[in-house]
Amino acid sequence: QLLKALWALAGAALCCFLVLVIHAQFLKEGQLAAGTCEIVTLDRDSSQPRRTIARQTARCACRKGQIAGTTRARPACVDARIIRTKQWCEMLPCLEGEGCDLLINRSGWTCTQPGGRIKTTTVRARPRCGRGGCPARRQSPRQ
Image (cartoon, rainbow, N blue to C red; front, side):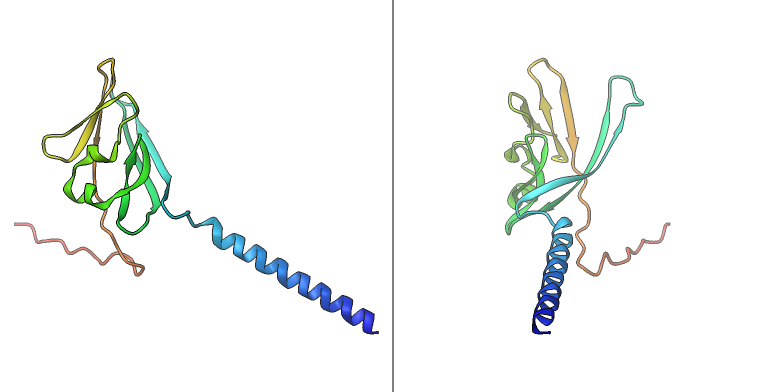
């Protein structure tokens, strides 16, 4: 009888352990490691001749003092000061061998390849919202 009870107890303990391991794995799957980014969406529009418009959304888990940016044409966590001051080229957004220049209005940057091809990137900031979601935006009345 004692042996049966011990086997039942061991089986129950093993079952609980497996449930905990599986639960922990599910919690980890949606999380990014600190200081890393992943591309969530990537849309390309090649409807215009000699021009491709690409829009991408990234999800980042940045450390304190960092914010989502671009390094070597990939999403990355960069120093928040770069984003605040719009000194985009300081985050090294272009590929190795390309030259970086700020757009005149600082709304983005260009990467110039050695052959002369130019890639232009413009930044569109999204509102930062807390855990409760974004507050409803009030629209000003049209006149």
